[in-house]
Length: 261
Ligand code: PGA
Image (cartoon, rainbow, N blue to C red; front, side, top):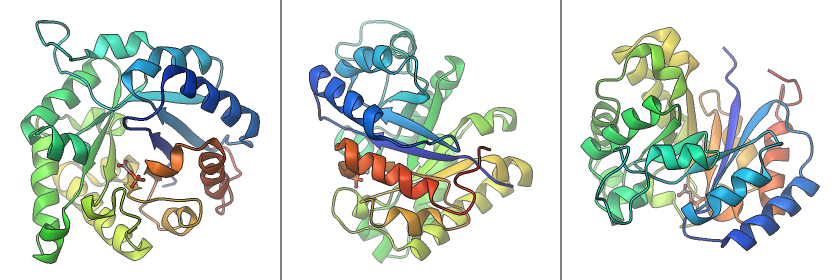
């Protein structure tokens, strides 16, 4: 089954609202046709409202980098799912490795955010991935199993297609060390097998699984050519409108990439 590609730019802690506007204007002017893939921008919270307004007439989706799982309350500094929806968000990242490793988000917290996203009609992108030390000690699969078991706890198979998984090896994020297409394919195939075992073959086959970690215009095509890789989550290379547009053009140049799904 052919899954629709998703190309997502995670801006992390970069760009003011003004810089966001400059990016969007230049990106929309430069990007070529992208009818057969989904394009998603994930700016910081303070730029969401402006991005939502600027992109409301376009086919570009907006996502947030994180959120709290509660609807409201005494949580200084936190952002609720409803606030994201009001800014025009369609997606939200849950469990990005920087949230896990810098801010201490546990699998339990990630799972609560994932449920809250679905309840608010936001599509969660569950990020999973091993550290270099875990890979070198042969623990990649057990780490992913724990993150999938914890992150997807209590999820009904019926809503699985609304969830996206992003495999982002921590050692490849922001380091310039991309996983080879074969390494990324092997782990993503493992994730799909895990989904098949815990849910069903059709559900696993319908789910989009992205690769993230030092994706660039130069390497994206070979990653997306792998049978189980359904898109990319891009940090550094998504900050420049030309480079992000080149990544989308590379995705569109794959066989079948110019045919609307
Ligand atoms: P990178 O970041 O492309 O800069 O490695 C990816 C991510 O953290 O999502």
